Length: 55
Image 1: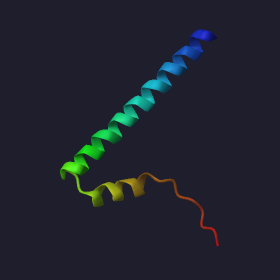
Image 2: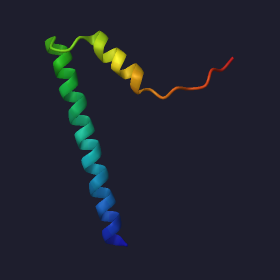
Image 3: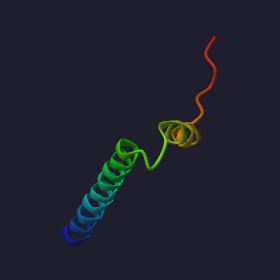
């Protein structure tokens, strides 16, 4: 049981480490002008979960 929890902990740590590094690379590319901010905004809009309309 403890080994399983350690494996999940390591997997979670690696997931968030890689995710954070990817965001830093993306920020660097936008700051240097390699990727336009408009393209990043469009990509982020596609990744967002669609929420129901609230009237």
